[in-house]
Length: 164
Image (cartoon, rainbow, N blue to C red; front, side, top):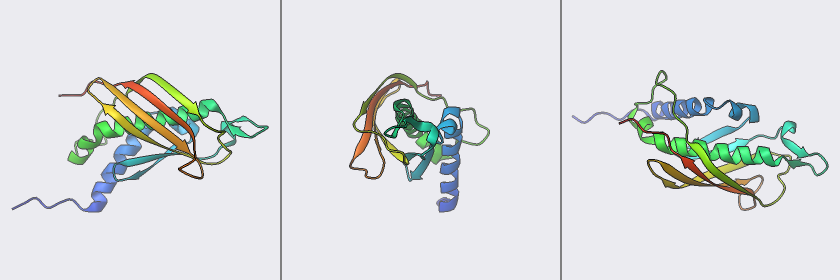
């Protein structure tokens, strides 16, 4: 007799808990107020507008450092999410398991295409290459219109060792 599949709600709760555990490991994510929306295996990073993230009050425009950090965080969490997806689906990531090791940034290049306005920002990362030791990621950030990106970045990361 085949094993009965888990209820959808159980699977969603496990995925959401794994994502929250992953995001909770990085205090800077909480400092910037970054949140993650999950639809299946697709993540969208959201940086709600906060006055503290304004760099030039005359325009006003988002600070370039806040923008770069937002895009880098989106890339690192996307990489970690991709690395642990199989573990999450197998149910081997549990609340008491050790912390997930995060990728280390080798380099990260940001292209500022237009001023970030004083409103919520969104970012989505795409993993171009995910190997055992190295990964390459591209990230795009937008605000009101996904087709009008205000910043994009490319990063290369040193991947943590995998058990087994």
